[in-house]
Image (tube, rainbow, N blue to C red; front, side, top):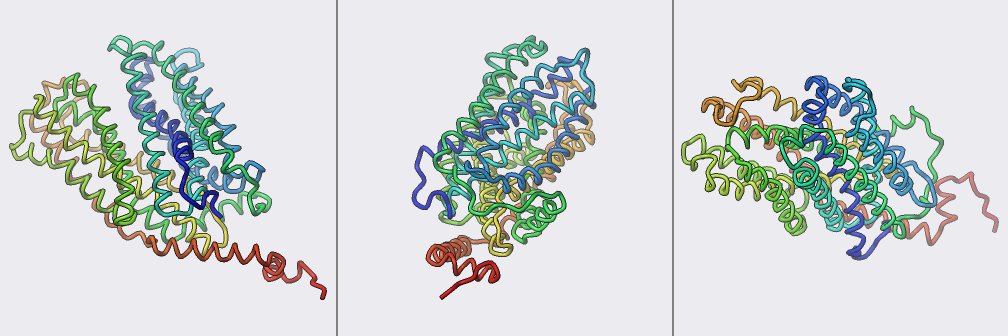
Length: 490
């Protein structure tokens, strides 16, 4: 039985979503600041930093399903998820601080960076996987699950954008400050405190709703049994279809994140002012997603919303690129060029995030399908599987970007004004071709997701009927499950 059977309280939506702030802070730090910090400030070779971060990503992705499985098996009077959310944020905050103030003498090496990155990623997973796994436990309503994910995505983006704004306005306000370690140390301390406050505060705010002893006590843990259950969950047909679509869309997202700096700098010739406004453009697109995704799910359902969002995002994002190649776009670097691009980006990113949030919300419906087949729930395992797909795909997206950059004539350190027009054309063409293939694959597979609203609601109704029957006849139900366990006397 879901913790909430009626409308979701507004307070619960806010406090649950606020836990995703920690994920947004980590994502912003790893995506934008970590490589320059270790490379330009601490003097570590960029290849060494990249290899350490890639290795940490692989280790994290492989361990995530086990974290999800252990979260599913946690058995306390506070439920399955809250103990993780109270304990993990403290060491996470400590390691996040050390990541930006490395406790090593001399220049950090591969193993130093790897140890810190793995620790941060695993502890972040220990917060995020149990937190997101609460969604299908809190409510089994098709639309209310989307509502909770809307608040999670909004909070995650707010956390990441807040850290970006604080970095450029307080901790690293000048080019000179961006080459000194002091600002990064303060950035780490501020982010660590915000991470711990967000996760623990979110857990405390949900405590009265979700803190209850699980209905079934799990059997003793074994690695063999754990991996057998994980593989059994991952072979669920709906999960495999989701994974195919999710892999494509996450690779596209990883490529877009990692290639954005090249595109904005060399293709669109962004000025300093344009770079300052760019986070605001992203934030506005997420606000539009927050307003639009609920009505779209009620009108079209999640699979169709995911597929259409991927296609619309693709079309809007590359319309300016296509017009530029055709010679029909204003001169890049001008106010009119940047302003027009921002308009397209707002709606393109809105559509793309709608596609991603729809795919993420679809995972919640896999829980009931698996329960119908296997007789048990595995929220943590499935959302850890989502993270496994996302992290592997993000690494793949970064790899695609590196191949694109290596294939064009763009020397390291090339000034914005010195890039050759042919190099710009090659960059745009390769980026468009790769993204088009990936987004078409994502739309195809996500649109084929086999669980509709009607099927989900039928499963929920059948489960509630079984639970009502158990409450009416608990002894008879136990005897039917295990005839030798009870003796009934007349």
